[in-house]
Length: 467
Picture 1 (cartoon, one colour):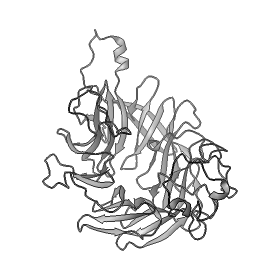
Picture 2: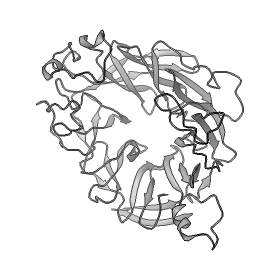
Picture 3: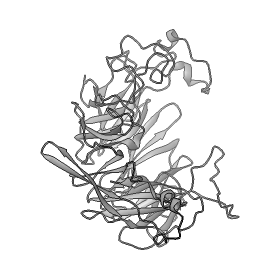
Picture 4: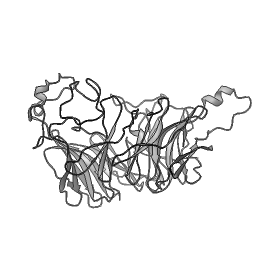
């Protein structure tokens, strides 16, 4: 069902929001159908993604117990159901991904394993249940099972997926026909090395794979050349390297570097429930708190993929604790964008319940989620992007524009009862409200053309839809 919701005017530009509600898989209800079913059986979109080189979107939807994948292409954005899972069997669908050209969609079927490694078997099948990667072409045809695994990392051209299992990296070809090679079927590890492998990331051209290999008290960022089957380590050291991020040209990798384990942590297994050392011990370099020479504790390195050589692009200030740990970073040109909230005394932002150190930079001390950016250059100061006071729910609530210049986020700032989309330059500035009105807009997803933004949206009379 295709509906025009509203028009938003921002200065000289106009953004048209088009609601694409997933159509019901059944025929229209007859007059004998009880009225309440017409209101309680609306399809509900769950996840939304967009291709990088064409204005095509894809999403998963929950419809009366059935879970299926859909797609829509500009300019009409007519919704097309890609899969035909027509039973209410309790099998979950999640982690949808789409290739850069929009031709291939992959997703997971099956619930996440519990602590014992069990996948929910809602239908009590005697064959058990699994969590597997599936794929489907947006041009048509049935979906097919690719391999048993989770968290698929889809190649830019959609021809293969990577995933991690038992500390090794597996690759499966995305093809309906059964591959002849056991590595192409993900029955044998594609990258097997010492330690534990994690965080595989395809290069923009799909030829190389960056990943993290952890060796107990240190870790490396490495790059595999798929054609030559050779591995190059990016400036290997005795520190902890993580979060590899490819530059747009594929020639460099930006990654985080933290000190290796301090003396008091090297010879014992750490107990997460152990009593926290006193504040004085935490500030003794080398004993319970390791630092780099110069006193800082976090650096971002920029490595040349061809040579493995790296230079220090940025590091936090000596002795400060606010930017000592950065999680979920995103590379935007020469900037790193990341979430961070500086809670009050005993709040979420302090971690150990200790008072903030005097060296902490000025910034909001509250319980709101905040996003910052930092330019990758020496002595750069992190810039607060989300100066609006409001909830930013999770990683699906934020996005970067295709050119990396704009940061979009969904928040209830200025409208406590709803959520709308806001935008702010990655370099910093005053956030601008993109959507408004009586509806709710979440999950911003910029489209390839740079002229449209897809969202999940709803209002008091329209159920959750794709806008």
